[in-house]
Structure formats: structure tokens, C-alpha cells
Image (cartoon, rainbow, N blue to C red; front, side, top):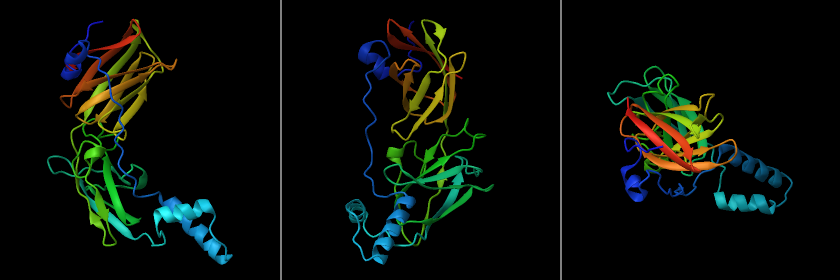
Amino acid sequence: MGVSACLLSTAAMAQNGTGVSELEPITSKPRPTQVEPEVLAGLRAAKAAAAAKRQSLDLKTATMADNLGDPDTDPSARVAGRVVKPNGRPLADAAVVLMDTNGNLMAEGHTDFAGWYEVTALQEGPYVVQVLPSARDAALWARTWYPANRSFLRAEVLNLTGAGATADVRVQPGARVNLTVAAKGKPVVGATVQVCGESYLDCQAATSDAKGKVKLMGLPVTPLRVAVTTTGGTRYEFSSEIKSAGANQIRLDTVNGKLVAKGNGHE
């Protein structure tokens, strides 16, 4: 099967002449600085129980307490803001997700009809904020990181204090990818297709249907990497480049044990 340059990265095609590039793993992972609220609550309970019995903490709990510092401050900080489209109009019913700088989920809220949201009872510290458009809006807007970034690695860190913070987010246009997975020209059912942006937190996955088809929406308009894992466990990877917010059509097929791709342009 021939390989089209309309979707695959031009640089990758120049590299090996096939459009299938050697991919480096997505290893960038920011330093952890926050923990799940449940962990803090468990640590507080363990310290209180030990104090009541006039006992020392066990080694594991003592080590955790030493690493985390004093977790006994009641969570009282808040993050509030407004989520809007590029034209300034509000984005309603969107999920607003707060993570620590290691990508662990800390809290979640939702926007109202005017795009406003508020998340309360938070620990002080650094956070990153992501907006996930509702299923109704996923075809138009990408999952966007505060304040208007396309990747977790580009997100601005929000340093939250007891006074709270404001985080307004302007969502970005999203890309759609329609894939067909085949083996020797025949559809592959049940293959897992994962499409990632620049970070391991900018990934989406779906399973091919009875016709080998997969549809993904709300992807960042950035170079993407695609990994396909067949039901037999064979894994293929290649890089591609989304150049518009339209629906990009790719057909994947295995020829002589190698994955090739053919794109038919943008809608």
C-alpha cells in the first residue's frame, strides 16, 4: 500500500522514505509536588491514632509524613474562573479538572450556562487545570490546558494559596481523526487505537468496530503519534501531523509485517 504525505509528518517521510517514523517514547513527566486528598486524610488519621495511643508512627507512615511535610492544614483554598470559546462566548457543561504537577487528579468541577465554575476545599500548592468539553461540544473543541494550551507540558502552573486563585481558560479548536485498521486489506475488529499529543496525559483511545473503524474527537491540533495494538498483542506506532480541525481520514494496514498508512486529506 502506498503512503500519502497529506497526513503523515513530512519530516518523518524524509527520514525513511515510507512515512513511518521511529518514535521516541513520551517520557516528559513533571516533578510530583502534590498528593491525592485521600492520602492526606489517611495520614492525618494515622497520626491522630498514634498520638491517642502514645505510640510512634510505623516506618512506612513516618516516611510518608516526612516526605509530605505537615498535612494538617484544613483544605480551604478555591479555584474559580470562566471557560470561553475563542470568540469569547461561554462554554457550558464543560468539566474543569484540577491535577497536581505530576498529572494526578485532585478535584473536578463543571461550568454553568455562562461558563463559570468554582472548585472549593482544596489544599494549597501547585495545580494544573484542564477543560474537557462536553460530549456535545467534543467535535469542535479540544481538551485545553490553562490558560489556552494544547498540551499538559505547556500548561501554566497555578500556585494556589489560601486566598484562592482565578483560572480563566480559552478552549482551542479540536481535531478529529477517523481511522480504519486492516490486516492484508481486511478490517481488524477489536484493535486498540491510542492517539497522543505531546504528553502521556494528552492521549485518547478507542477500539475498532466491526468494520475496523475508529473515531476520535477533541484532539489537539499538533503532531500526533498513533499506536495500534491488535487483539493478538502486536503493537505498531507511527507519527502524523494534524493541520486543520477537520476530520482526517487514515487507513492503517499491515503489509509484510509493517504498518503503513494512507491519508485521503482533510474535510
